[in-house]
Length: 200
Ligand SMILES: [Zn+2]
Image (cartoon, rainbow, N blue to C red):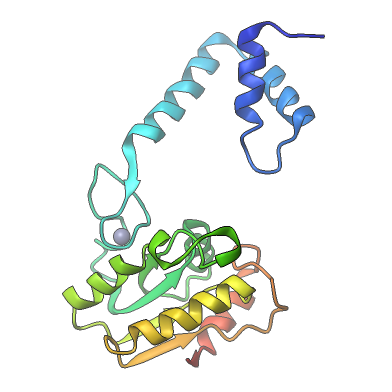
């Protein structure tokens, strides 16, 4: 059975989310339509506002608002001498949850993956080099990338690239199996991986 066009369109939009198939998308669309009109308006307003107001921090590429630096970059209490490189804002959030890390971050927005056609130019890597050139007091770069093929390729690439800019480059001490995800790792394991980090 065909649905009315606005409902078909709504289902198609939900299907764009990772892991959402046709059935889940239908469930989400029907759920949304069961809400009060005022709640549907509120939902769409929040989506619009997120699309309009959320930008990348010009320094670390974490999410920020209004084109200004993010809450971590502007926090006076953060240690400006250490930058932790992560592949996504989700991994950044996972490391923040450990409450152990007090330095700054740099979000690459992906990992090098030749199979998927993702090279260094597709990531925020040149911006990291520019950042290091601009703030010469950075003393340590922590490469907190997943122990996957892509994570390893990116760690190797960055280690070679960043050597001239910073005296100490380290990586997380993963007691994790290859392919495990940083965002899926519990706080205690991540805190240990951070504390036991090794020179690259
Ligand atoms: Zn920032």
